[in-house]
Length: 120
Image (cartoon, rainbow, N blue to C red; front, side, top):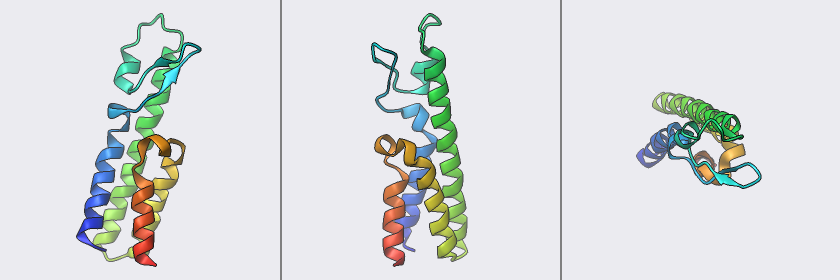
């Protein structure tokens, strides 16, 4: 596996760790109030009816991002050992967890697809 791919995995780890921080366009409630990050969700006034939902949503994204990053770190470990199957399997797990947020996060799927293509 190329140094370029190793760099892409490291970048994906960094990006997924910041999903809740950097966020993306998300709305809540019937008025479609934008709440685009965990920070924004936590700063909502307590009177905002959907604050709990918004905070919970972004907390979940943070957790999934951290879990994806953990699989990315495992992928780097297996890559260092020369275990390509293990590397691809770990990146697959990261992109699988990302699926629900894939349209917004765009992090692990491209890495997995490129890695699988190179391995074929």
